[in-house]
Length: 212
Image 1: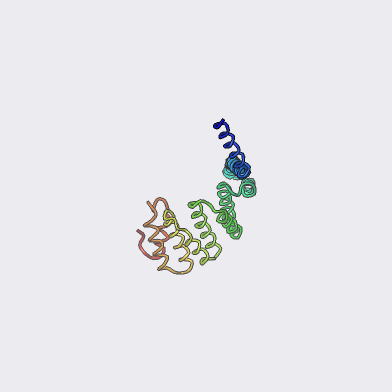
Image 2: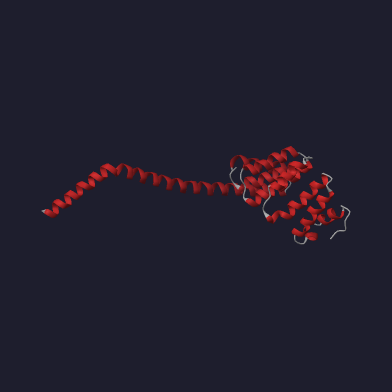
């Protein structure tokens, strides 16, 4: 009888504890389930988005290779509108920027490249975007702004390209001495410079010095 009463007392204590703390525990469980379910849903949604964006980007590449510029531009715009958080939209935007720059529509090219930067690309793509924006700004006669883009490139893997563009900008600013230093650094930093970038030694030579 004593054991039975002890168990009953324990049961009553458990009931009282559940009555007091049960709602909080249940609410915590519900929240945990909701968070887990939401996370899995987001992961699945993200996977689907990436797959769809990848397929559309491949379509863009095919259209561009077939010189269907208008169709490719439409593909790129759809990637921007429907999948702006994917790297494929950023790559598509680089295509739009290059197309605009090739047609000397520098303001549009600048706008597209800034779109990429505002969508937080991965570090290598961010560096490439800054470099391209510097070249577009230089072509648009904005050398000071172009230099500021190069200052944002901190990845050492792009140091050679950055210094070459810096040299181009300094030439445009009639700073021959500064351009000479920048080109020399670029030639030191870019492997097999004569093969990978045959124009760089010519730029250096055009400053009136013997090419290395």
